[in-house]
Length: 288
Image (cartoon, rainbow, N blue to C red; front, side):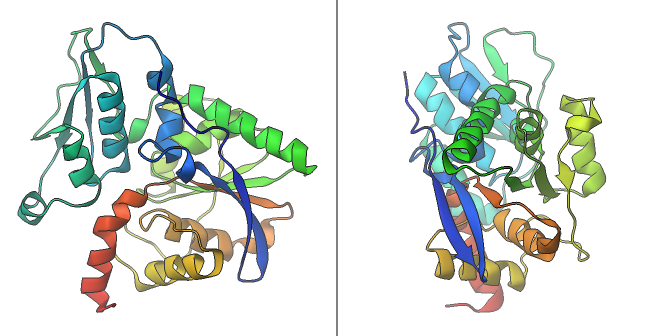
């Protein structure tokens, strides 16, 4: 059975004069890491002899797409992934998660997915891994954080992470005694609340959502996003994701005064995506 390096370690860093704990889920595994390793942990360990094919859908540079390609490769499953569109430039110059997933044997298909199949040899996973099965791996994450809290004699850390579907933040809050804070990156607050409710109707178990005054559109390039990403790497020697983490850190810093407890930031991986994001930033802003 494929083994993951768990529990992931926790680093203590300083950024802009304040101390933070960083849960290094980006180091869980070279290929299968971050929040996707947590979300798909159940499928990695479960005995599923009837499954022959994995099907999912989403964007053509999705972190989940790549992680699912790794999962399918490990389990010996076929993997079909549906997208609305593949830009001609990307098709001709594969890079980032798209390139890596293709190398793992992914079949990428332009068009609409049929999620109503009754074929029990097919495992269907929603976009971004928004599945109840994700609770399995995220409870393990919550338990690791509790063990860290006890070992460091921290009374109550505040947990922060940026969200796509919000699945990680939701199940982390459900199984944690700490408050979990998050910010929506893919959609707005109403979108994130809707995603939470699809998995958990009890709103008392939902994470606390923090917003910024400025609206950021998912996937759009902002100079301040690149600058904080670069500054984080300079000050902490840790590479963060360029898609979610800049919004996460900017939100965290803009609300820094509301946190009275030590902050534990969840590093959710996604670094392969930087392979395609960095050239985009350099082209747009003429960066060296």
